Length: 142
Image (cartoon, rainbow, N blue to C red; front, top):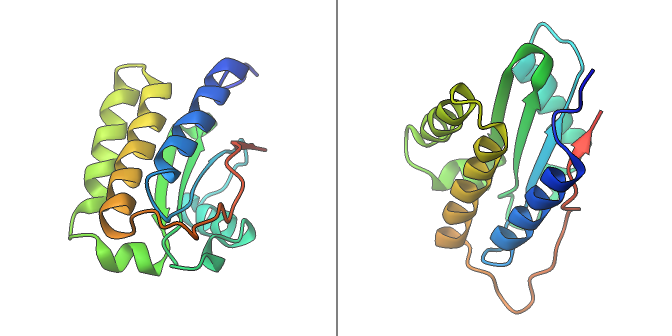
């Protein structure tokens, strides 16, 4: 099976995550999974927990899970992030990412999700001097 991202694309996504996290006290993770599951959202929440996204200081971590084999993705946020965003926020991110995906721009879809999450985190939790990177920035692939 052809990899979803090239090494260069993966590196550019890591750079995008670092750029957004430099603006905010928040954590963004991206996971590409070839696992098969009937309940995609359940799989994504399991990954959320396994990756420790509920353990951040402000409970404002977010996870983008891309399931290329079934052409699905999910964007999840912890309780702090969810309580700070307006109704329809998650649907807006999904719609923007879906538009890019329909146009065959899979890398742009992930970048758009990362950018929107970063904008939200920066607005609600601007980076402080004592902020530290609580989670790795690398793209997870399984």
